[in-house]
Image (cartoon, rainbow, N blue to C red):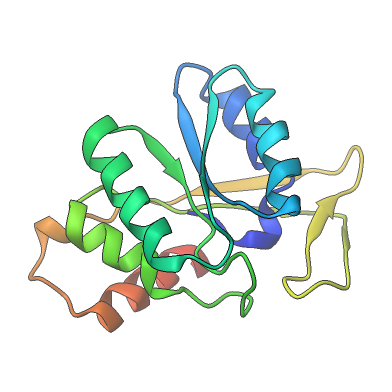
Amino acid sequence: MLWHNRIAPALFILSTYTPHIHYTALVSGSRDGDILSNIIHSYKKGGTIRVPHLARYQALRTLVRHVEERRQIVVITPDGPRGPCYEIKPGIAIAALETQAQIFSFNWEAEDYWEFKTWDKFRLPKPFTTLHVTISPTVRFDQMPQPSLEEAQFILKTKLTS
């Protein structure tokens, strides 16, 4: 999982430093999603799960089914596609609790970047800047007392902000 405003270099970082891993991103069926989907599919090991823009429950069911059947990395922005920024929506926590999947956060900070005036304050690293990438240890809800949905959201948010 990574914040919505950190999408820009994520594909490049994943494909460069984990070239052997297949990943699939949960992408909205909107026009913006079309652009992102085309970019993801331009990478050899990238795929998408396209879901209707406003169909939250269908997206959640599709995500859970995909994780249970394929056992591969699924990239999710837990505050997307409309925010609020830096707030974990319940979907990722529900999916993590139901599938017992391992969840890890992926984050980057740039020494110099542009920040756009969008709902998520989209960030784009400036050329030749230094990126600091953080990947957290995994969270597995099957290896702890079963948390409530709110507790699971809190645990996941803590991973993304630390």
